[in-house]
Length: 108
Image (cartoon, rainbow, N blue to C red; front, top):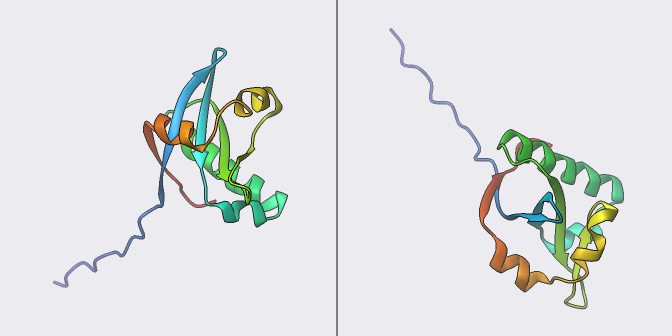
């Protein structure tokens, strides 16, 4: 009898997220690296959709919003229009203090 080969499994990247409710809607704020801004809109959308799928798989319903620090030190975001006004009122410090869940990102 042979031994079963050990399977090498790469760990899925895990992100700290702020899972909160705003105006009766669930919002999943995902801080990403500032290099996110340099990606094409198509690539940004693909990454955000992967976070959305992972959130649903983790039983976290709501809209995923990606946020990052721009070159001037302010918070930039990619979000559905209904959340823009709220996002203009917060910053990366607020997001850092609101981190309350972990989300693993599966294959995009």
